[in-house]
Length: 346
Image (cartoon, rainbow, N blue to C red; front, side):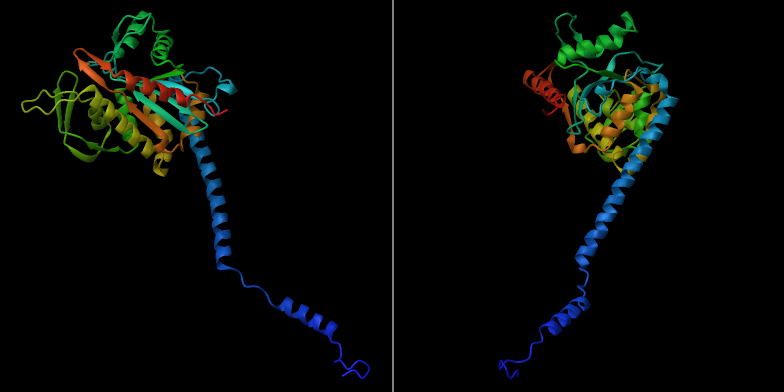
């Protein structure tokens, strides 16, 4: 006790030093949760960097392959503002039978795709090959006959003619046209390791003249390139015990199914590694007026596009020999869906 104050002696400084000493000695244990989150964060960053490097590698390999097949692409310079990285694009996709045995230039597959870089999305509209087109300034024909007619008139302007005609028909600008023959389609499917689809019915058809031999059984299965081509082309049977025939609408639905599956496989890690092989396999089976730089921009922009962001619209209608007459409401809805992809947000 302090005789002067009657209070216990002051020990403030000593206590403060003791408290400070104690504070230094009490080290907080590391939170296992924070440590785990930090580790995951590092792994995530490393993963993102690895993905970027890998996509760059794919683009590099694709560029090398495009150099090897430069005859199928347009060598014109690409203005930066026209790049698929920043501008929506539209492509007319034609599947043509050019086989020596029976091939012509009529298009078995007739599709239009619009792609939006902002939304990383696409719309693909499939039009039945026997659709009757009634368009001002053009003679009324089946839609699959126009390209052949334009090419017989002037092969140098056929691409521009078909793009202009289809653009008027769908009320959208068509930027590019890509034409692949049966061999190219088959080779791409094989390069992907086949496609997993549900064959909706038995299909049997034989044509000795051109070597066609369609023999598919109903059920879910993996189809190689030749069988996938037969699956999307099958129309009728000519055998002793014929299988059920199918309409243009059935064919369009199958085309959409196969394309959807090809996109799914392409977006897998295994599929990404096959991009250069796919480009190489196409070779001279593909003709297009897309600049090489644009193709690379499309690859880097859309290679990781979610398959759920791809809308396939097979337009339906009514068959009245020898034409298909499209349903007006469905045709208009398909045109609007294509237009929406060509619009960027303000």
